[in-house]
Amino acid sequence: SGLAKISFDVFEAGGNKTVPGYDLTIVPAIGAALNLSPVSGTLLFNGTVATIYTNTLSVVNGTPGFSWSLVYGALPPGLTLTPNPTGSNSAQAGITGTPTSAGTYIFAVEVSDAANPTGYNGALYQITVQ
Image (cartoon, helix red, strand yellow):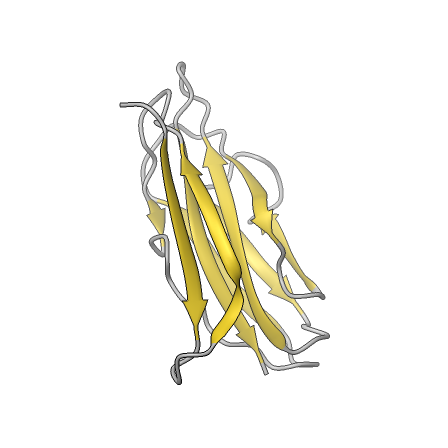
């Protein structure tokens, strides 16, 4: 129990550091730990500038009344995180839009549910836009 802090760096295949180091603080869940799909650390589908992008995140347990938030980093410009379908009760969230800038984007999302006490989980993802 208690907080855990993890530090990490991201490197290209050739060994060059691509982004500054990151610190991630893990806070124990207050309610049930929700399971996210894809799992944290997943490299999501690559995108292409000026081409429509669609991907889906899902929570696979918990009490309906889900709320999704972008809590770290940024999505590629032109993409948004939206509960799918619209509203805050969805067990899915879409990452959709048309990327406008090439690059590698690292971000974290958090989902909570309507249980009492509330269940939480977060996940770190990466999207590369070419």
